[in-house]
Length: 433
Image 1 (cartoon, rainbow, N blue to C red):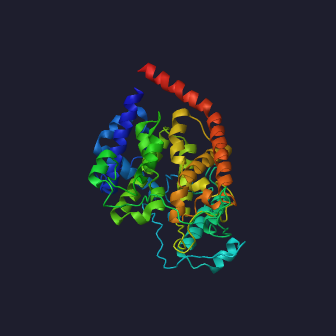
Image 2 (tube, rainbow, N blue to C red):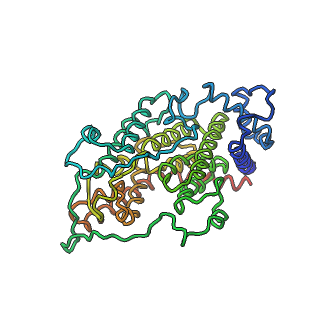
Image 3 (cartoon, rainbow, N blue to C red):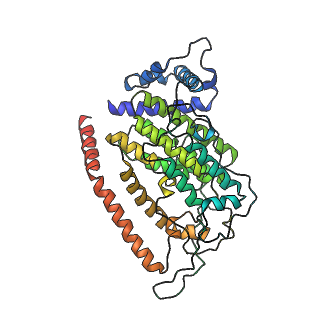
């Protein structure tokens, strides 16, 4: 029976997205039909009633009614109050962090520069848009979003500060264990689209089917699909959770997307979050799961405005600069919460702040160690491993690899009981079938 519900919810989700991307959600199947009340919408998304939503007209009416309740403030996705700005509106379909800025970045920076002094001297629109979004988001905590202790206003502000001052306090190139200075010229594969060698889009979309049928920076669209798909979570929920991260992809890769691709990502992401809200109303996912997911997306969108326009002028190679902690900004922009939610749905467990921080640090270290060479080549100073380089690079990397293994081991031990519970659940499910 559970398998039937999983495949059924996925079929409803795919039909839901199709309706959301059409005009049906705005006009409804019949103008004379009354708006469905909120409790009726919730009931329709319960397992025993999902089959009714395979009727396109009925699901179109649900979409029309849902949007009505959103417009009048009866329903919200992330908070208890309706959003009052685009930065906290997860259904806006308008997130686009591109900034029309002609500056060549803020570099060099004075040693020990503080944030207020830096901002008073910077003319970069991307940085101003970042800090403005952070201020607007933080001003609405508790009403329009709540991170349940995991995503907080203080952490968002510190993350923005960490990013915009990433080029401060630059250090000399490190030495190797032979006492020689590290070479500045670093070579690595380039992950940006390259038509002469990339797989044709038509072939790519057959291999990796998605709602949007797009290819975005090699495998970017599949980051959340891979993170959300390997588990016992309902297939429809997992697919919606993966698609709900589209604004995160936009924040990272908007320069690589044409207008059509950008619009598809915006609309599908909103459709996914609307679907998850209805599933939440039906009890399929909890308030903690949806609320924390929404907070993580909102905070990432604020940081997504940041761009380092000095990238072409800063020195290349491996060297350290200002870095106050492994997860000061990675806490948000490592974007792992979409992958956490399916595991939470499957096990019924919730993470506290300490557990999330440890998991974020493990993922950040693995990510930034793997990307060290390519980020050094592209002068991507957001990489915490790159910024943390001090003195002897061999000793530094050796120490950091050991710390990474230690953190990963701690995460593994901490979650072993949850893994065992998941295995027991899986085996009991298979036996029942």
